[in-house]
Length: 550
Image (cartoon, rainbow, N blue to C red; front, top):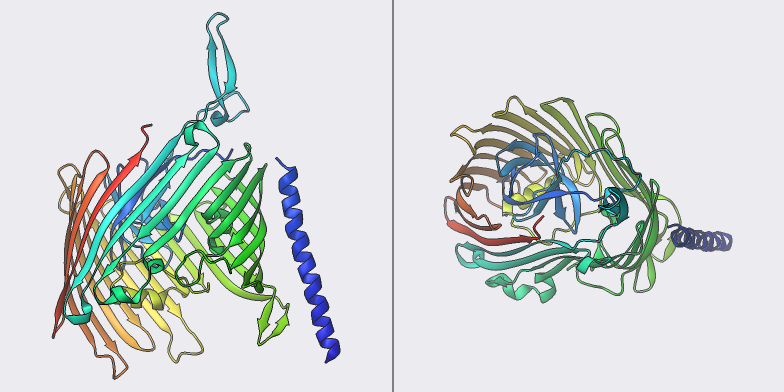
């Protein structure tokens, strides 16, 4: 027994020293080695969603195509999350590829496709400018002056439920996202994404200020040189995105196709996402990143340690890979391997797989694509949502497990989709199964219209149910005004005697107005009618986008 404890103690010391040595080596490499490519994005925002489709609004939909993938800003990071199904001049119909619903006003973006012109110089266009010597009629390369750019959005939203008794609630949500690059032409950039959501009604007394005020991003970035960047504040690194945010210092250094990085600071609080000085975390990563003929290929490997009140909580390895190296195919996976466990005061250093996520998307034909995924990540906490009770049930039961999605655009005006989900847990008697089939008809009532039908059937260990949805969207006045009508029929049967069956007829209508100065106003109403009661939901939002003129 003594020998076993001694062996564990020696192994613990060795693992600690190896871990610290690896971190030290990463930072040494960073200090010895000596600009990210400028990418132009078109940004929009989620204006509406239902159980199957997500509707996104842009100032313009330039260069966007059916089957393109859009990025969304969620949990303080940009991730690929939406697949384009139909397009109008300023909006598009999409489908989530993340296995979860997306909140209203979520920022969305995609890379504008701009043809690059050949150049005879080896210097990047972003690093040089050309000065003309009129006397000698020669062109002389010179270092370009950095230009300050900014892009931001400001939202004020009011959302509430008007029913009976405890069902009444109201809340106001204010959001500010603002990015400034190269402040006053210098090397410093700023990024933030902050929300404040005070609540009114019975639920107002159950929360704290930290429950209402959320800082998802707040950081300063300093360009040490053309290859090295320092970030101070709260931010998620794209190279280790599933590890979450770091409140502290991060460093990234690019050397040819390699990226070396390290971080030190604190993890956000587990319960309310506030700053928690007890949750110390630090680590380092190395990544390989390059642009292939068919798209980007990126692989990241990290080692990290997280502490709670000075005691080791986790010590783990993290691997993330994303590639489009095969034509018409994209692959993403991430996993975490714990190296340390302390259960009932017994410390071990066994390697244990604790988190896995794999997503594979393949497009065998131009108008047809297949997406398959497996999700066994640690439970994700969503800090802001507008989900109804039914939406929350669906998300809770269908995030972790196996998923298959099929999308077929039969023409520019007609498409269908199917998704199936399966999860089985040994602790539960029955597996969770969810099937959704949808039909989308574009331009049915003229330019700018979309008619969508969806049928959702779910079977779980504690309820069976189905939802039938019909939704019509129409752009008018040269896409300055958008009208939306929706009907949902809900029929859920719970197996518990304490939970009665849920039968609802839901009617919704909303309108949005967009100005030439990037201002939008949206009004939305939804009425829910049950056999013995009814209640009403409203949503009003004002949005203002501001950005520098290009």
